[in-house]
Length: 237
Image 1: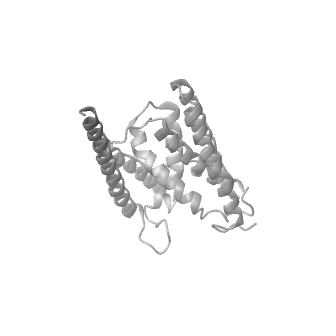
Image 2 (image 1 turned 120 degrees about the vertical axis):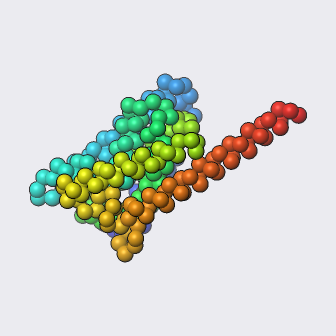
Image 3 (image 1 turned 90 degrees about the vertical axis):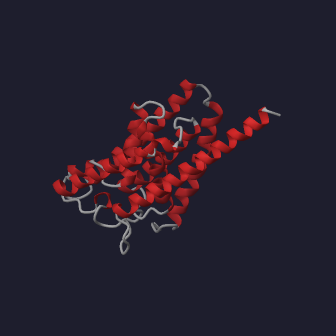
């Protein structure tokens, strides 16, 4: 198997999952009109996301000769975001604070990983459980975020920007615990950069993310005010 990024296997995965994602979202928009039906779609997707992230973590537990139960806890931003996103949808309410931290991080992480799955060659085939479960939980995370936006489960506003600070603090606290107790040196990239040879540790990425997310919130607010003013002017005609 050609397990390179943008090798034949990667292209086949993209050719299958991306059209399915688009068609699935179109169907979710067209046929799930009521609040009840939308809730069913959201909860079902969240359940599938939870299943795949749990399978991925269990595959890491049993991946080597010794059973390593410390691997059951995600040690990356993407893995933790998939877990948090699934639980927030399954047990949280509409527009809950967790969404405001995890939706953008989950979206960016999913897109980057789907198009640049650096773990693709970790096993002999793409169906190696840590590989396929890693790909699928990122794909379901992408669908989950799109559904939250599609069904207006999040009211994106700069007033909830502070959730980013609490979210990153929680992630890095888990990472520090994993490093101190289990010796996981690359946990949440607190010490080791996400790309070797760069300075992209969590301490660099967190401010970049906070600023980037802040700019997105600003753009959303400007567009919202522009549309409101346009509706007001149209109503006065």
